[in-house]
Amino acid sequence: MKVMIRKNSEGELSAYVPKKDLEEPIVAMEKPEMWGGHVTLANGWQLQLPAMGPETNLPITVEAKRLSE
Image (cartoon, rainbow, N blue to C red; front, side, top):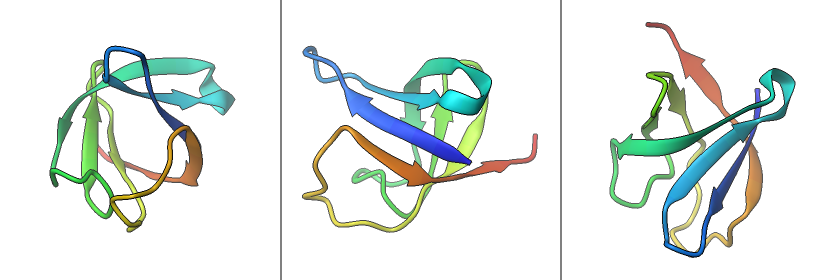
């Protein structure tokens, strides 16, 4: 699924899923650099993100996979 990852002015990361019209803060990351691991959203969803370099500019739309609960 397509997911937009962005950072607000306070430095907090969030994920927006256009198909579900859902925007949630990212509350946990498997890897400190976020890319190539899974992230947990405030609503409990876990998304597997693609591997990308730590210098990747935000906002960015990526193809992510929702992990089963």
